[in-house]
Length: 110
Length: 109
Image (tube, rainbow over the protein chains, first blue to last red):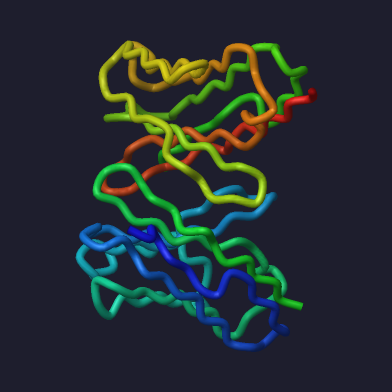
């Protein structure tokens, strides 16, 4: 198994642009989590899904952030419009019990 | 809401010295998990503790769950440079984990 796959691994964009981060979970894992990690705020849970259904999006910072999971094999996290303070590493993780993290997407918004 | 705090925030040790990080929850936990994140990497699961007072060992790492299931510790004996990274505890809250603030360990050779 390739593990959790995230793309892109690095993204540099300008303020105001739309950013889409992608995640392919491990097959058979019915939970999917999106996290954001920064030095200042640590590891923050943004949203999670169970069987493709969003369960808790209370961590999504603003309406500029949205996440979807159209099927069990794919999820996206979109930021529109992006701002410099969105710069962070975004992780996708899936679980049966313990969480398996993807390699992350390092986002830089200029 | 539920919070999980870790101390210390940073720890610098000489190779061969011991290291301990402590995790405290504001509420009783059903279980606690520990993760390690190498610099530039992603969190990797180390272990899960479920029972009150449980102690588990992985080579030089010893994990303990408090009797009240509100605190936990990770102790590394005789640190090595490969132990460098950030160690997170995470308390189980319903479906999701509440991650601690992490302890960053630096080991000097």
